Length: 217
Ligand code: AP5
Ligand code: MG
Image 1 (cartoon, protein in one colour):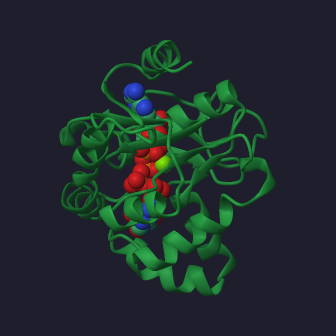
Image 2 (cartoon, protein in one colour):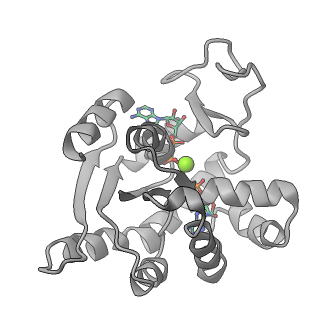
């Protein structure tokens, strides 16, 4: 099972990925998480990516495509994977198609821009596990601490209002065209076509999860 989660910053890709990776027993490949860990390690990739991420812009395609190509050759991807935050541009989607990587399901999570700022300004994360919380929608049991490890939660450095607006701009400009790319492909009469559907991301996280579980089997 190869799944792509498409959606604006804060649409709930990471939140739904946590359900789906368990349901299908496939790894979550979250390019944002991979880049943040490269930044923390001060690796060559991290140093190159940091300035784009801090500015709410996309990291250049070449860096990301190489990163994902390498990641999906790892052993845990042999039964499939869940792509969260990739592809994010037409060249990234074309690179995957040209490599012959056939995707089974593409899910667009749709959320109005007004909801995004409220969601991202209240988000808290546990960096080591990727667990995602929200101060009111999905609070941890102990304020400021992870439910499982009791380690401190952090606010992502790109979750400031100024950077959120830039990330939304990049989404509309560069990622939204992928909706047409995949929905048109889904309507073609080819063996490689994916299933494409959109889901209302303003529903409760658990409701979205139930709908996804019904739709994908
Ligand atoms: P990335 O980490 O992918 O960030 P993003 O796309 O901006 O998306 P987010 O992780 O912010 O949101 P999400 O949809 O996962 O929402 P979440 O589930 O956390 O990328 C970061 C940066 O890396 C990019 O800006 C770019 O620079 C670079 N990058 C990454 N991939 C790249 C690529 N392929 N190409 C180029 N550059 C790339 O939920 C958000 C909040 O809402 C949480 O608090 C959650 O609890 C809450 N919430 C979730 N669902 C619901 C719900 N249904 N109802 C109420 N609250 C909810
Ligand atoms: Mg995410």
